[in-house]
Length: 316
Image (cartoon, rainbow, N blue to C red; front, side):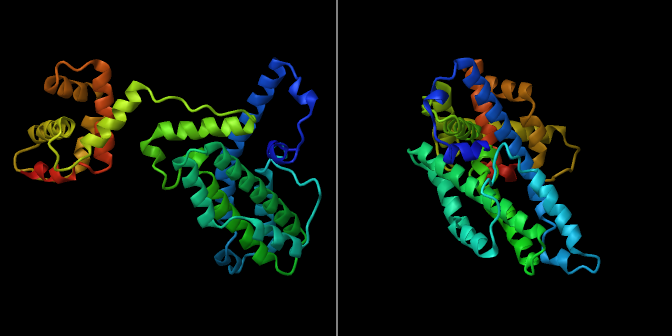
């Protein structure tokens, strides 16, 4: 049994509960490592599945053996320590029935949003793991069926491709950080997803960490600094930092250079000393820790284009 099979199909016995602490910890570490390797292997599976498409099948040099080789390589990325199909094979009718049980892409996205936005996060995460379990099992059934070279092999190859590149892809953002969920701007949110995932895998209770004072300040700072046409102190500070950077760019230009390449600001923003000195000059009483948070928040606001109304200053 793989670790996903154990999560949904295995029964916990008193023997499992009575295992000593060292064995339990070692098992947790092993399972976590297996899960992380599985996430890494998805990138390989996703890339391999690209070539299972109609344009490839229409090429003059295509033959079934070529696609079977790809299917075999995909199969290698699904470790039996993650997922197994111990009850053997399924025929075409049974496979179609399994596919119909899977959630739609819209439902999967909705589940991911629910996990991020609502309170009952463990329940939503468990549903995502269950959907992954069912999707991977269906993929394994399809691959076993494809190896027999059935009459509708191309349709089955396309179905396998779609499950990997659509269904699986949409199930993994909460673990891998891709998709339209703002993980790149909120790394703490992705860390929370990882913590919940570990709790579900280990069958433990997830306890939400209380927001630190620094995290609360960063959140408030972003909210205020991103407010265009606002006179609040942090928006004003953000605009002053922006103008200090613009002045530095202008001072370094050759005479007559009126380019408006906003990308010129990026190297300055990535220079910690430059940013520190600007903020220390503007707010000399601020502590180093507060300045650090302001630097990171300013960069987030810049990336999110909250200072675009000032970008014209580069040419003035």
